[in-house]
Amino acid sequence: MDPQGNHSNRLNFPAGFLWGTATAAYQVEGATQEDGRGPSIWDTFSAIPGNVVENHTGEQACDHFHRWREDFGLLTRLGIPNYRFSISWPRVQPDGKTLEPRGLDFYDRLVEGLLERDVTPMVTLYHWDLPQALQDDGGWTNRDTVARFVDYAEVVFSRLSDRVPYWMAVNEPFCSAFFGYGNGVHAPGISDHRQALRSMHHLLLAHGLGVERMRELADDGNSFGIALNFAPAVVETDDPAHEEAARKFDAVQNRICLDAVTGRGYPEDYLGDVAHLDALAPAVQDGDMASIAAPLDWLGVNYYAPCRPAPRGAGDEGCGLPGLDDVRMLPAPPPVTSMGWEQAPGQLTELLVWLAKRCPTLPLIVAENGAAFADTVGDGGRIHDTERMRYYTEHLAAVRAAIDAGADVRGYYAWSLLDNFEWGMGYGQRFGVVHVDFDTQERRIKDSGWLLANAIETNSVPQGEIPLP
Ligand code: GCO
Image 1: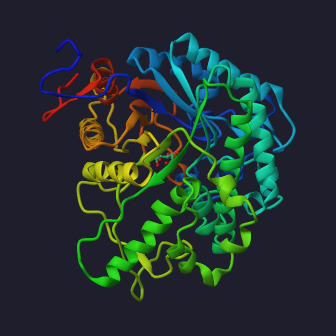
Image 2: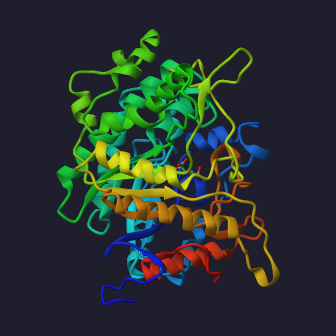
């Protein structure tokens, strides 16, 4: 190691690079009826047979509500200095309006527990678990929900902001709106393109007004971002029809939310793609776009894989999303993860470089990156998850390549600390660097967890072959 702490034959990260792991409330907490918690749309949605693989629900999840001390002990064992988690809105306000003090007290304990272990918290206020009571009044299609969210943001921020530096109002508004209200594969399970567009606008408005409200209360120890999920559109033909399908998909997946929150407004091409629905433009009221573009301190980048859009022919299954009626997804080429997602680290480099050019004044933080693979618990409880180790090594190298190309990437949060409830896929898709036996709730650190620990300890990743821990 040289005086600057650089290791030869390894890819070194900048000094001060933020290393962390991420989770989300509904995916890990369980205890869905404890301490006055109200039902969320995910409690309702997952209880409906057929909505989630094997009818799994978040009722128990990783039982993190009771086992958080053990889980934070894993952060210590792995030397993970930053931890992103989300607040369950219905635990803090069971009806979406009325404070449940025990809910807020729980998150106060989590923050204290992190600080006691020298782990820096990053909070996401909304990671998809809307109080069901608000959905009963229209949910994100109802503009009133925005005001409810701002009140909720103020309540949580007022309690925790003195100890939590990093804040995000909303995680992936695209998924929440388009999968929740557009094609129905997520809660609340609605398939209505007009509702999806209205919901997306209101989620973005909630983000902007929430950040604005929190910034009014903030001191210089607080910074604000948003986590947007990106999937670069890969086209391997110069066929104009393919190019058009990719343009449409790129607008929906990669540009609507980004351009709105960074002050460009909604992309004109997309407004044209959905003009026939007469839903997005009418939802926009005077001042909304300026509110949505509330200044940010950094951009959270959630990346897993690219997509391969193509023109949709007769009999082809479509995306089911607004503006994509004539678009389908081609199967991902190998290597893929157990989710069927393409492993394409080079696309992460290209994405980060593209974002750096599109938002040159906005530092980037990879707020989620990781992979699901089937895990086998071997002798002595060892989990030799070499595919996940390779995914992390390659994608961390991709982040470093983006930094070398001039992208201002400040950090990387692995998704996820724990195997957890993977939404519509239930518990069968394991993203954790720590294995969870959902029958016994036993935790076992996977080899990928030790690889991450080594990267953190050395602020670098190996080049080429992966050293086995
Ligand atoms: C998302 C969500 C996470 C997922 C993870 C794996 O990005 O979809 O933020 O909750 O579990 O991405 O799909």
